[in-house]
Image 1 (cartoon, rainbow, N blue to C red):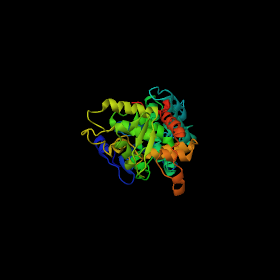
Image 2 (cartoon, helix red, strand yellow):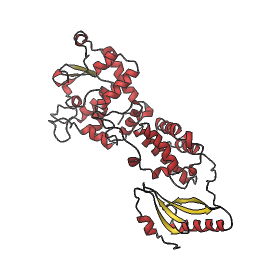
Image 3 (spheres, rainbow, N blue to C red):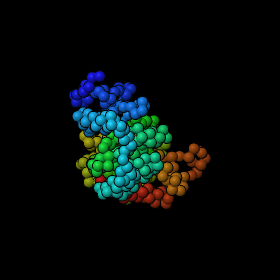
Image 4 (cartoon, rainbow, N blue to C red):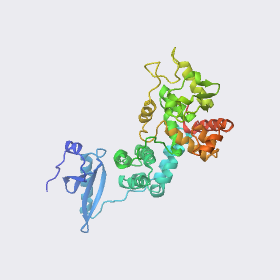
Amino acid sequence: MPTNTLTDAICKAAKPSEKPRKLFDGHGLHLFISPTGAKVWRLAYRVDGKPKTKSLGAYPLVTLAEARTQSAVLRKGLLEGVAPVTKTKRADSTFWEDCQSYWNGRKDVSTGYRENALRGLELHLKPTLGDLASAEIDRAMLLAELNRMDASGRYVFVRKVRMWASQVFDWAVEQGKATINPAELINPKKAFGRRKVKHHASLELTEIHEFVRRLSFEKDLNSVLACRFIAYTWVRTNEMRMMRFDEIEGDAWLIGGERMKRDKDHIVPLSRQAMEILDVMRARRPEGCDYVFPSDHRIDRPISENTVLALIARMGYKGEMTGHGWRTVASTWANEHGYPPDAIERQLAHTPEDKVRATYNRAEYMRVRRPMMQDWSDWLDQPDAGGLEG
């Protein structure tokens, strides 16, 4: 039987295929290549006539020379009647304990983000993997748990849990608690599904604070301020784009009916945060420009209708969130917090379907809408959400 048939160049150049591949080096030693591209050294052998396989570690972390050395030691032991140990020796800590050690040590992130990461790992990985040592968890075991999340439709959150687990495994490798990071062997773009793209896609309410935290990392560009302003006011993107300074009266914004979807004037109460954005845009106002959010290149034109969408796509939320999506999120929040439906609908500039009710119900509900909009803005600005400050 040919031996030492592999070279490092062959191992490095080997590409994955639709089905698992094995590149044999001789004496049962082979490089296993999964369809995802993961490469792992394995030794095939027999004990009492039964076929067995021993994993020797991932390539290139374990080199060809090291794999051959391990193989020789194990085969020598077989000749002496000593079978390879197939179960990893129990470490001094479990995977869940490693999760706690790593994330509790992350002082560079907010308390809310740290708690979100630990909570996600606790809910979705701890029940099955938590009592195992980090070194005992392989790609298949981790993927099985993530696939359960994916099958339940948690297309966004499953990617976050994989990322949070990957950081724990990286730490475990550095601490000598594991030899490989199995999460790195999972390509989320290929492994998991995606939410169906909607024209006015919006995130779930539970995902908003992470989006806000991510938005806080962006530079203080006009596009970022525009996205924040839509969030604070619940207006449509085109209404924000066409906003002019002469439409602002104190802490309210009066939009003429000619610009509204239902041809009716609309008063938007402005929260403290929305007013702060207007102060910033007023300070940036080019001479002779009437638009609050002007184009970067021409003062006689408003910001492009695709500017906010481009920002959201750059943040990694393409197809999952839109500027218009803030209206859906805000409406969900307000209804869950018990605000009167009529006040919510008026803030969204919706007219009751009942024409008789629409004729007689002309109340603006400002007494309710003003505190509602301030409460909403404050909720978005919770410290553990990363805030909306620039």
